[in-house]
Amino acid sequence: MTARTTPPFRADHVGSFLRPPYLLEAREKKARGEISAAQLREVEDRAIAEIVQFQHDVGLQSITDGEFRRTYFHIDFLEQLGG
Image 1: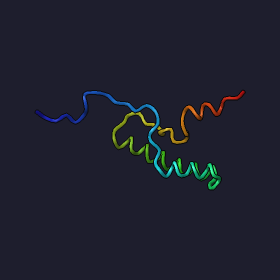
Image 2: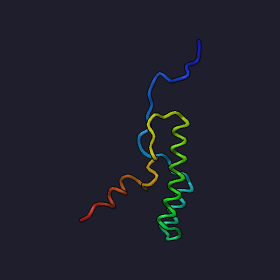
Image 3: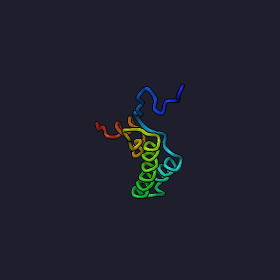
Image 4: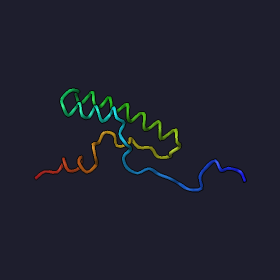
């Protein structure tokens, strides 16, 4: 029997990837006023570049930013509600 090089199924990733520790630390620093929004964005950019490369390397056909600019979907949503 020969080994298959591709699985006989399709897999997709839906939702957020786990944030790397350095991104979580940057978010905490931003919350404490130790770094600016621009500095946080630079860290997010680095984390996004890394997760995009990871997805490419493992062969995913659709790639996401990992939702790394969000804290959590429901929190980001709820913070936008008024009244």
